[in-house]
Picture 1: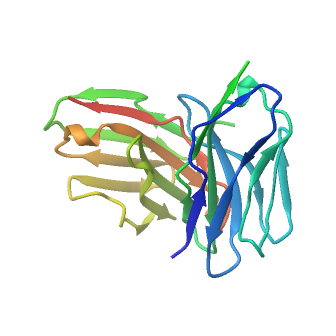
Picture 2: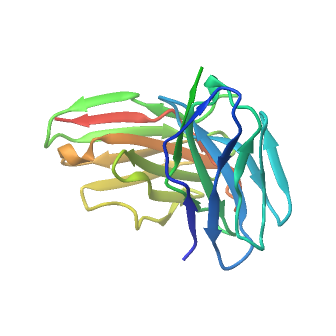
Length: 111
Length: 114
């Protein structure tokens, strides 16, 4: 079945460091890919998405490119801030209504 | 616009008691999802509805859990009887229901069963 694998955390960075969180997926067709973010005490919210191969999703300085050849959707940000500390979830949907979420990666950013 | 609304935000109960969690999805959304989040098991999909009809309840842990969606603007998740291992944060989410689109999450209900 469809699945999402993302790097284990926690990831600890200093402010202004470069961030990469790896995400790979397994799917039989052509899924839509998402990154959701969860801040402490809140529900998940959409960070960015891409619906077809080679699309780049971007928001708040974060970006991720849909790579079909490597079945990947890695999240990157050039300069993280303390306020980016959160849990990041990679996810996919394919056709139906159900979304498959990765296990989440916790990010800590130190001032 | 109001987002997904969940109540209560926090619930503390004793083992054996009935617990009812409530959710109001975003108006116009046709799909509704119930999730459970714990440190040990992460985010788990319990059940989801489309047009008020349960589509997949394979994630419901056991018969103690039940969910209903009597109309497009309201859903409940009931645990009877509750057990300490049910302690978790329960999220409701909704989406347009056209497939492959963004889900909008509520703030969650933090449940503690003593």
